Image (cartoon, rainbow, N blue to C red; front, side):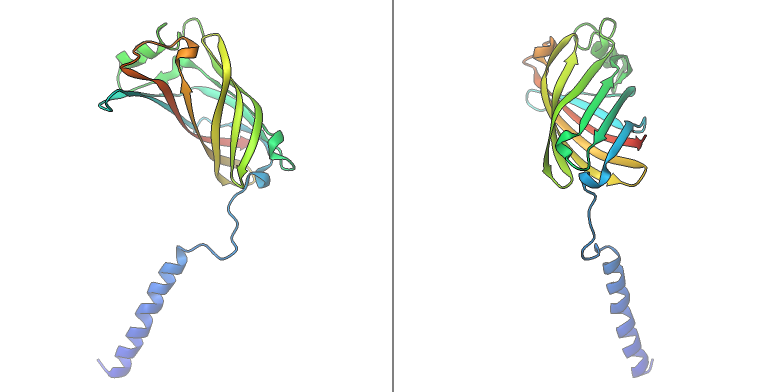
Length: 201
């Protein structure tokens, strides 16, 4: 190979590496999705994922599950995110876990009592924006006929003109709702981990 060919290759290789690096680098000034930009009313899509877990003392195990049937509407106020609202409903009979016996236990009167309480609902009472893409939602959660105030942390992950995605995290004590079975071997705290997708109405 001639010296000019070597020089050409030496120049071409770094340029290609630079192009690859720049391809994964956000453009300067690019704007991440913000709650105020996503103003509108959305219906929760069936492709959403709603999971929960209850830890076991010692960390050697626990119970994990998910809901496959749910519905809800949320509204984002573009002028004042604090005036936004959320409503969602979970259907305990749709709970799924790793084993059928665990599912039956979760549906039983010891936990969700799905035969007598067909829904778990949440209605927001206030929204506090904590960042351009984040907020804390407070509201009333009702399960097994008992209601109390709870709080969830929300972060917007994706948005376009027709759809939206965000994560919701929350820690809820189960004893106030009459779900004391298994304590103290199993934690009194239920950790909710949700990836919610919405379609604009």
